[in-house]
Length: 429
Image 1: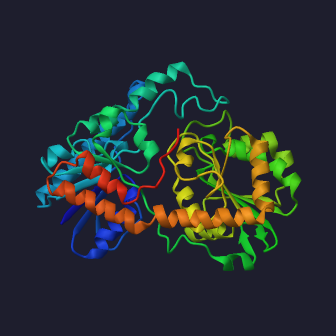
Image 2: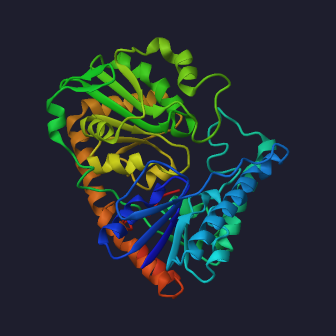
């Protein structure tokens, strides 16, 4: 089989399926991407040059579409070169977010297309306007609506789609959902697993040494920003640090902005330190930025309480991995988190807008040994039932085979694929 993958940052969301296909040594796997240093044995990467940004005179509401169609044009030219060299894929798999797939049906008419649909934007009722601290600007609504332009073009390409959670699926209009399969992403449970040995020795992170007797609270986000509740976590810390002198806190994340906007000045970390820094002991709270994967994994394995907060938005990989490691997870009571965490069973849920309540809940987990043990054990059991990588890859293979076989992915077929990794309960809200 010949597979063509497309993502501007190889391998993106396709790491596990690409590794699986390449390791079989039965397929030709080609990946079109912007240049980067990543490599997977058995995968041929074909780089394309990042297109120029939208012209300054382009209306702000149209700039994302402008960038998407520019990128689609560059990728299509790269694909045309591949075709001229004799490569025709059996299926094209990629992410619709940046527009890269939009012109590929013109290059290879009739080749099945499986696109990753990550999120359908709404100007109300989901992430925008969720946090009253940052009220939306009515003048920004047209730009938010226009962000779905690529979504709409992609949905009219005649291909099929996938999305990883029920909540993300629910953001798409009813008319679009029949084209999208819920394909739950998995975790390598043999890598992301509890490791009691980590608790028996000191663990050093930055300038902080976490001793076996210390209580470690962890927080992870790609960037430290309000979309992931960073401002609420920071406001909870003075309460927590006053309550317990043995608490150490590690806040993993960079100082950029992945979602939403920047503060008026500096970074969100600087803004929050200006607000609550007098109540935060720098010897007990560390901000190491982004860390290597093994350090990140060791911190999760050592964690006594792991905090995951998010707006109603795409759930982070770190939540899945924290559950697989067996963390005692304290999550925001928001829809994306409720899909993974049931309060009192495999984690605890707290109001997104209650920093003192968050601090009290963390303290409860640190002090109630039986509760913490139960949460950790049930988190791991949940991951074993619902996040196994083997189930994810099997579902992915089944979907690909149906598409390549030329059969329409009916509702019944999609339900069968989803059932391979469907939790017993449905998401609430």
